[in-house]
Image (cartoon, rainbow, N blue to C red; front, side, top):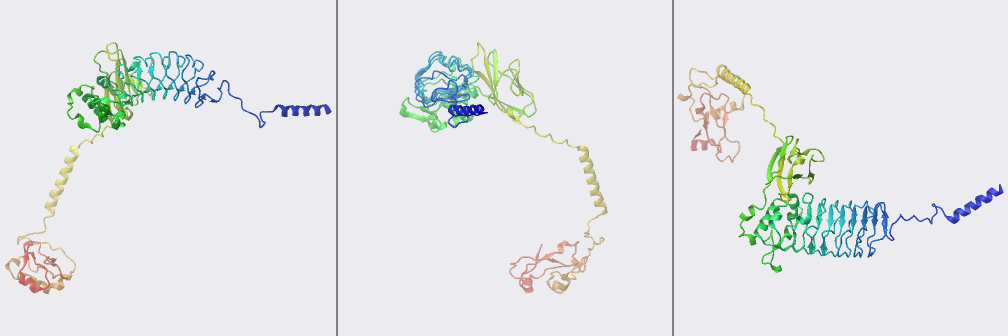
Length: 504
């Protein structure tokens, strides 16, 4: 027993001396290969703001998002991304990179986002971006780019957003887009550069969805009539790149920096521009109207037969055979687009992209589809029912004419029907009625209707100002309405007699 107690005490002493994970002085173990002073969290590696002049030698292989921004990096080694086979986003902004070089991104086949903004890059070579076949967003704004190789973006077949704003580019070829694929590119930012020469036919030939994301504001563009009409049309169509920055679209009237003119605020400069040269720049879009629930077929009409045809939906989805992701739109073998059951989501601009050896790479055909609900059909007009109804109404009118003759008979042979009435206070005014009556009781015109008379009561208050007040006696002669005589109300009966009667 004593030996057991000594052994337990010894174990306790060893535990206190060595420490345990539950002790207060325990420090969490640093993740494997995490660079000094960097932060590693799951698949995120952040080494931002550490003043690094070179990339850390060892990087965790599980890194999917690498942030090396706000440092002092001046160069990148070829193959430095080889261990990071899961890398999806790379942030290199706010460094001092002056050049890239061949093979820098050779092992970044899974990269989706590359941020090279706010560096000192002056040119992009033909092979500087090799290996970025899956890249979707490339940020190159706020550099000193002066030159872009003709095929600088040739391998970026999946690129959808390219930001080249705030550089020193004097020209940009929209004909080949420096190797970019026009089928995926949705945003091309060229704002705040030095673009003084621009090919207007190349601009007009761009797909509609790219025109909507083409930013050319704050460039010394030429004050060309065709460019003015082209931008005006884009503005009228509501293209966001022009509409949102309309105040910042400027041009040089006399090729002098001091002669800057705003396109949409000083339109008097273009008053003498004829719209005739601008009519053939853009191929007008075709407007189609479709009803909900009906079918729709769109054909890609090109100048010469195309080898490959793709479509872009109003939701910016690239459509190839067999069709859209939800299955509502089908791309057929001949390149046409078919919608079997049109819905509201199918409203908008459909763009056809045709490619081939004899076709311009971005030859397009545009359809602006409007979707409407069908109007309810009116009920059929039942002529038999209306004919029967008309006959019934006519029969009722005939019966009323035969068995309910009019009550007034103005001839002596016809006696009028007298309607019984309740005793009226007018009986008390019989004396006054005899005085006020303008026709003597024994006048010849009264023979057909004895004891039937109309009286005019004296106004009960002053201020009638000559208005007529009529009261009908109990036995009014309906057969002799001509005997109805009116008098103007006044203050006394003597005034009535003096002014004479008024008759209607």
